[in-house]
Length: 400
Image 1 (cartoon, rainbow, N blue to C red):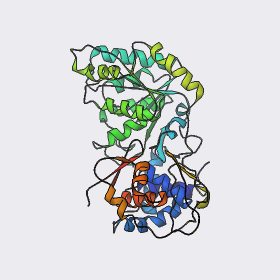
Image 2: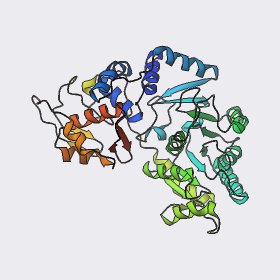
Image 3: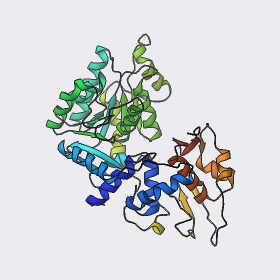
Image 4: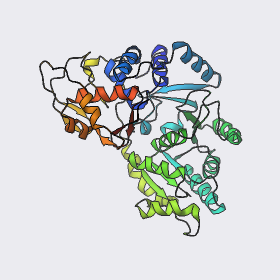
């Protein structure tokens, strides 16, 4: 699949619209058969969820962002296109569009993330540099977040073999600013820099965990060199576990707070990493098997042919009920054929609260058809009243 320029513009408009995240994007495009039709449906869906006004990105705004990206030689790559990394496409929160600067060839090679403390010890920096260089020489591309400390050392060590930096902000808002020269070195040596955030976006606190899920999503495994117990590197490790990736931790002294997080990871079952062989012996069979990708979204496919796509949603007001079973992540739900009586989602909302609940359990507890469950959740998400969690779970946010 390769998008036309018009479709790419619509995709950018949709993902930049208010309350549209990766899962919602895929649901909308798969259900409505394209981003253009999904954009038309957004206001009505938001109203049904209790939101009177929803900010939908205009064509002019999207064109302005594309022009700003082009000035930096940044291009937008859509999920399902040949240049989109297959490992990243395999995760359930994969960005529909990634803004890529530099070479896309490195994104097609097997990647390993090397992350760790910003205030790393000299020993930690030395080990990160040595391990990263050896991984590069073994044919792996090292991925990291361009942060100070371990990230910086990992990138520098693999300039000659290829490295990928994932930004928490827009391409024109490099953070930290002191690493802008490193970013240019990455590009000059055939590496890549990517972001899912808009041009001009200054990174904020919550943007760094979002970046971290991409760092782990690009990689077959994540190596944590040093991390305190509240380190952001542990968030990357958690994402890796949720994504089914291997986690490696470098052990450290129990007297050093910077090793508490990595030692805890080993205690909890992470692979101990003291040499490159500890990483490559685990990853080689995984790389040989290749990433297990999901089908993502299919632009232009008719709505009545999308029942088996990832995160499938059936909206009763625009589509006939499917005759056979519909696969929805956790299993099969049989939809009754024939006319459907009007059902309200009020009972479903009453079952939701601040504690996450799996959508499968929510459907069983409510007794509602899965199409009504999915439609109600989508409307609540667009209205800013729903939060999605790992494991296909959701919870209710307090009202606006």
